[in-house]
Image 1 (cartoon, rainbow, N blue to C red):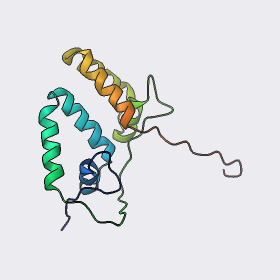
Image 2: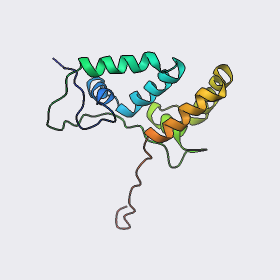
Image 3: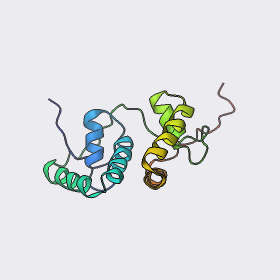
Image 4: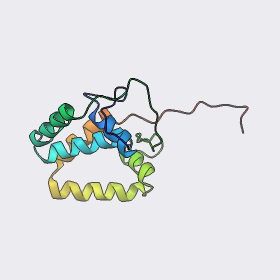
Length: 140
């Protein structure tokens, strides 16, 4: 039986998103980004209370590092207009980045520019940029 733990190694605050990511086999960065979106659209307090309750209820995980297979979310270096977030989301979801950008603009018109702008700026801070692959002239 799989158990839910807070992750000791992939943590930003208490390891709740890291543990959920390991349990669901999803990159914790995706869960953190969704958490930020939910915080902004619920006026922060309900999500912070949920996070604190999860912090209290979910036990801390084992002291050994466990690596699990999942697709990592990175900001794209190639497919970027501003910071590469839409390009990174398109690489993970296998959806064209133009469609993601159009959906982003539609959501902006529905909800207003301020929540989306705050979400995008926090996304720049929490989503790492895709690491560069070093050039190897001998490898073909």
